[in-house]
Image (tube, rainbow, N blue to C red; front, side, top):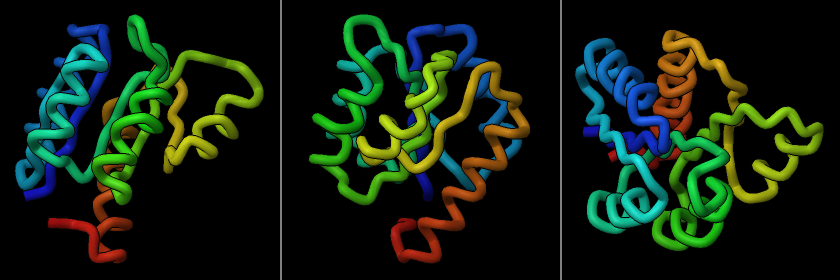
Length: 130
């Protein structure tokens, strides 16, 4: 089964996303975590194929999680960053860090679902889906 971890310190928002996605995508296992340390612990234990995370987590940047832990553990993880940051170069910074997709807040639930569906297809085409 495909595993997707959603990481954000805005608990209510990420819980809503997780519930919506779990009901709409029954063949995918979703897990919500609320901090960078919890995300790293989950990555080490469960090895998800897809990670969706906020760019601005408390105490650490989402990019630091991607660069310093996620890609070390799983070089083929598909990473989606959600950001409210409107800096011009944020997309370039994310892509340089190994992020495949950048979404700007607010993100519609159907839009997020489609991005995850596309990520699953990309991983399946590359033979990365387990």
